[in-house]
Length: 276
Length: 331
Image (cartoon, rainbow over all chains, first blue to last red; front, side, top):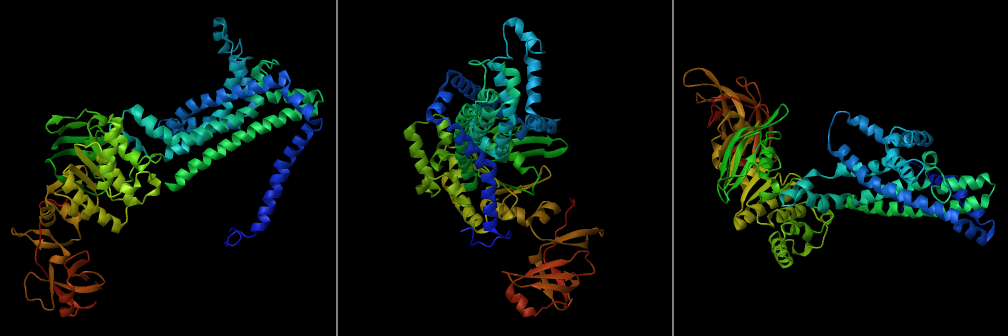
């Protein structure tokens, strides 16, 4: 029992009480109001708002681009994390710092920058446009923006686990006759799988809620490239508070699912490490 | 399998890990590479395993040059200090790994793993995870894993290094027996002279990338080839003596090779004052101060001799070295 153990920090009851009050006020109370607001028009109104073709299209678009971006981050973020964890090279500290840039940068700035680069008259876009490839104002642009904002979540989740992984484990596999590919697939990847899952979930959660960087590059065409967060903004602009709240509740439910996944994979990886 | 290495050299930047190492190990032999940390012994082991490539020199397995052979094709069994077990796999899967990647049949894998687990006396542990085992058990699984595919040579890198003294002692005895049964040519890397002397057929003492001396434990201990080996292998007293040609050289004397007396009858004896007496041990250690020696001297007596001399701190006594060694080089 926590209360029976003598703790150097006094006031378990007080601090626990404060914690619950603080979390309630800051997190649960607004979310509860959101749910209440969404139900204000009744179940029918909620259902109509959520299942309208435009809302469904936005949810589908949001989830698909987010999952795509998170998957891309799992592959390339893993490579980046591996290089940062395993190798020493000149300028490593700078590369390490750049990884965190998407966290610190206002996402709107990132959105404007990406739109500038990838639009048809931008540095990259102008070279691709003659080939008939248009990244900005279409789904690839959204995925690029979401990869950008999700990258640090993947790298920072996986990198410390790679650093903890003893290189001797790979060497053991290789001296036992495994090829490099076998050693990677059978020994390295399974050891990192919980961290990769957690990193995927964190990048996904970030992408689902992303707004600032996406709206500048998405083109925001209803039914095509409109994300749910923007649809919520649009509904608020039209004074449809219940409708906005309804879509918000669906987003909330999605975030909860992702969080549960994060927690599940984190506990399993922590359990493994605690036992080790 | 027998193996030999010739003129191995390896540098890491300005650090010289191997400085012309040549060694020949016979089939079925257990050789210990003994030396302080950073002396290059682990590098030598890794060159044998193929995990490190020497800058120059050759490695021969049964007379065949394997210097450029990748580690996966050398069929060596390597055991690491920190076990390096596959944490996400069960004990069974760990031991089976080397057989499976070589494409052994399911029945063969099951039979061989059972055989090995019996060999390391962990029969009931097949479905456990490594994290559920003690340090000694983990190291035995690491050994079973290394032995599974019948390696040509078994390489042990400080295998007892992470274990406490009692488990260490048990594993030494056990390893000696395992080696007697299996007869695999084995190289044991250690910085602990007891590991080396208790387990090995021959000991190769390494210092700063070179082999200082190679020989049977008893020969290496009693006839060290250099002052460095003498100092590395145990406590030693150093004091000036006259050589046969009359010049002053450093004489080396082990603490247990000193006799004590109350009166200085012998010309070779040395006047000294007792500083401290440590009698809580198998033998009694006595520290002295002597004008003739710059550093404190140490002698070890058995309990009975100590009692009969009735010695205590502050007494003036005479030391009579029974065996003084003099070396040409004082590295």
